Image (cartoon, rainbow, N blue to C red; front, top):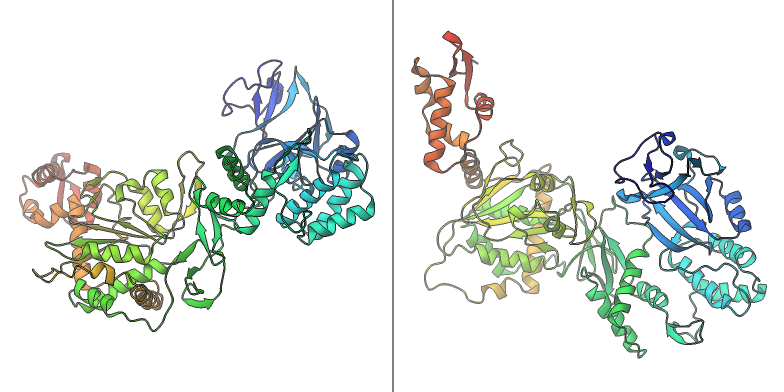
Length: 639
């Protein structure tokens, strides 16, 4: 059902918020259609009628007459990102405004003015619209039309640049040929001679330059003055740096070897652009920097396949696809580890440290290897949250985290446990394989929905500051270190299923501290050894059907934590409730809850409500029943 926005009389200004609409256009005098998310309106103003007829005849769709032109309605192609932008060049050389609800945006198209519906040129219902044709795809970096260009207007240069853009956007040669013929024969006022057009097409399609082999970074304005062509610079640098996008984050090729993530403000990409332009004696100012970054960000037509599985790439050209290594140089992936895959690596410093850290407990060593393996598993991993719980003294916890931090350098975040509820903090997990939260506080965690969703492998929303949120599934293993475990308000069991506690009970003997240990654990050999241990642990997890090998030591610590994290469980473990049941005069639920409240007050717990206690009676082997005088009593459960 269509939604319509009431407009102020005689204007195109909404009378109310865009959240306020009607489904009956007859009820309002002036109205606009609230454009659905899967619809785009291509708004042509002051375009020649013969061109509009050509487009509509070739790609018939819903068309509505406007004061200055026509609105063409199309369905948004799958995985296409569209923006609400004005004065944008189309692939076929015209200029239009784009209006869409794509991506949750709010946009409208006027359909009624002064109680009169606009003329419908071609009637097709919104739920039966054809897909936006390639010819009308937007080129956001261009805001000039090719319409009516004539001899002396730079037709050759414009068509050359236009073809390069289409080629850069991976438009097929067949489509490019058809579009160029349309522009030359229909859009230009006077067509280019056929021989000249063929030569221009050939140069543009083969990647040749129209400037003696060098990219042309300048253009001539209408006054005959030379100025920088920022679009040409952006196109050239995007191709040279092979700029890619992953979850709204830009990556670029570094030293022609590996892909590196750009910063939010584009610092890294600007640095590479400046290095290239300095060779041409070109210096950009801050405004030009910003404009090029804007062109780069808005010129991506298709988002990456959200279901694509990316490997982890290693420094020496190997890539890890799940549990298989494949030699594959210069492949795009957001997950690059500055580590060599060397199956023979067996650094004794790493081996000895892990043995010491685990107190030579083979079970803990096995679990530690599997935690490393969990980090490498970007999908189908056990979805646990690991807590390294420190004992007293110098236990090596900080050294261990420093080792992991260096091993996963560039692919780790350090978000604290209580910060994940904020979208801007959760954003730090995008493109990461591990989150290392060091020395978290033993605080009461009021909200834990996001941390459960992250650990469970489901989609969450996150955003960088001042940007729109994006949906993503976290690939990061969650690791936290602490002296005392935090307490979660959530007692539903969602957290309990995820938590794995790892005891850190080692202690460095006085006078035996190795001051160089951090350096020894971060060498190339050490990192390759950690990778081998991680592969070993990962394969064991897969062989175990996705389950970890939990030792008795870890299990006991985890179970103890879960009891202590649950005030009700702690109450039942330390209170003789059976004795209360034997006291026939006092074995009421009210008395039980009163004792529970006193227990919480004495031990610093936040008590749960009566309903929660009632629901959990069964879990601890008790039940309630109605006794004499309609009094609710408790007793051991009858099995």
